[in-house]
Length: 154
Image (tube, rainbow, N blue to C red):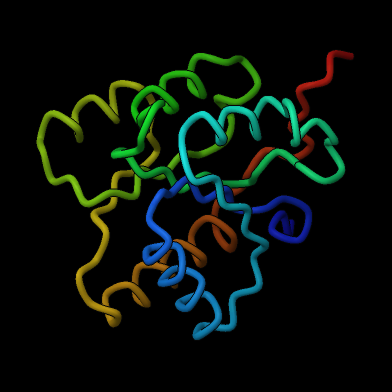
């Protein structure tokens, strides 16, 4: 199954610099996973629920994987995670918390709310490349992800 061709990686990240680093790492590693970036939690929920400018499911497909920063403005990452994992359809999407917070409380709450993994943003480009390569190999090479997730009722 090559899910990455059909569904994007949703990157929920407010830092333009962090987004550029992830895009650089993907390019450097020749990883061609499509990426959709949402700059805050509210935009991420609009995307996931296909609301407003994301209302066309052809242009805004449900992602295969979500990389979620915790420290977001307005709706923070923990609220987004709680909403995703509380939704019968969206909860099937793996969520990787991708954050600079090493706070034990954030780690514990993230897993209690259903995070599939918790990764500290790396401080070096070499570490970033290693993490991005591992994420790609595992989530898009090894793991079996649900196909055809849809918000449309049958």
